[in-house]
Amino acid sequence: MITAQLLAGELTVGKPADLTLRLTNNGDRLCTNIVFTLRLPPQITAVRGNRAVEVARLEPGEGFHTLVRVRPLKVGHWAATSANFSFRDHRGAAFRVSDFNAPLTVAAAEAEVKAPPPKFEIALSTPVLAHGEWDTLRGHVSNTGRTPISWGRLSLQGPFDVDPNGVVADLGCLRPGEQEAFAFHVLAREAGREVPVHVAALCVDEFAQRVETARNLTVQVGHTAKADSGKVRILYLSANPTSADHLRLAAEVRDIKQALRHGAQRDRFELAEHGALRSRDLTQALLDFSPRIVHLSGHGAEDGRFVAETDDGGQSVLSTAGVALLFAEVSDTVECVIVNACYSETLAQALSEHISYVIGMRSWIGDQSAMDFSVAFYMALVAGRAIEPAYRIGKAQMVTGERNGRGGDVPVLFRRP
Image (cartoon, rainbow, N blue to C red; front, side, top):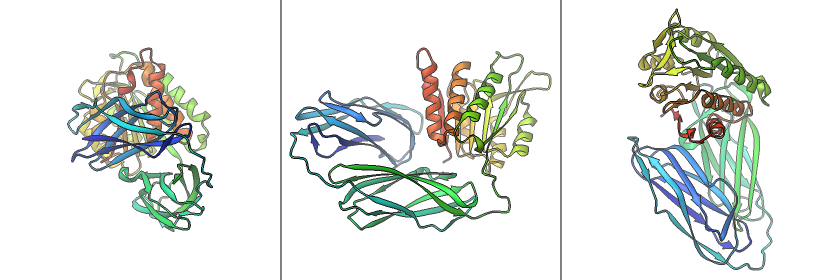
């Protein structure tokens, strides 16, 4: 069961303030596809922040929060509601909550209290991380300013898998000169003496003043016998049997290549492609190329299986269980699989037992929508975004390109339990 809270400090006319929207799974089972749209009264206007929230999944006891900056316009007692609050339970059943209501009180403006903004520093305390296995990356935040920090949040990015239960670290109150430790459970994908760690941080003081910053730090990751080159290898595999509807797969891979060539981090990405995919071709390509990302494009059967080709171009439907067993054997190198085919949700869910991130399609998807999703996904990756933000950008582009804008519910992202 998902509950929503809207936390607000003192709201004053004309003074920007932050509302914290918190979604929490208070049940004992997994919930997925959580959607929440915040509706503010006209007397309080939004300045910054995302009022439409989508969370792929929340484990029991797990929470998600985001900030919405507002500017109150009128003194009084008001209420925020939700125009869209829904989720699915562990069985896939949909629930909609229609009675969300959060009271908001706006006070008259008082004499402005001037205070220096919060100041803080971030440091890592883990000297060496293990390569290719789960380890703990530790550090601390120090309040170097003159005012207490009432709340803070850290998030981590880098060539790591991060424990889904610890993607964001919350900080408590820190008085000037105090420190608070943080820890992320990570699996390092790259070895080296200076592996980049990107830490994004937000701190808020008792006067609701906020400071956002990012720190580019490094950590040593222990080498193994076979060092990673640092390249993100993408393996694009496609099948288009002659008996099926024609798909513009050549155009899709062309546009993906163009997106990878033009991105800011283009030197990190390498793409190999294999068309007219047969069953044995899948095995050979995975063994030969050792990709980090595998992209399957083509047709999907209504029972979720991927449609490959035979030697003469006919249809060969691949066993979902067999494909999952194959990917289990290459899960040490494959981080993400995209199954860009109709009805591929079942296959994606089976692969997610072994692969960190798997994207499938819940239902039928049009040729152009599939291309829009793929190209935008790789545009985001080569711009430096992680898998989940890239997935959301792909969905946004697909909706933007559609006439009715309804296809955003077709792609689905699974994360390894």
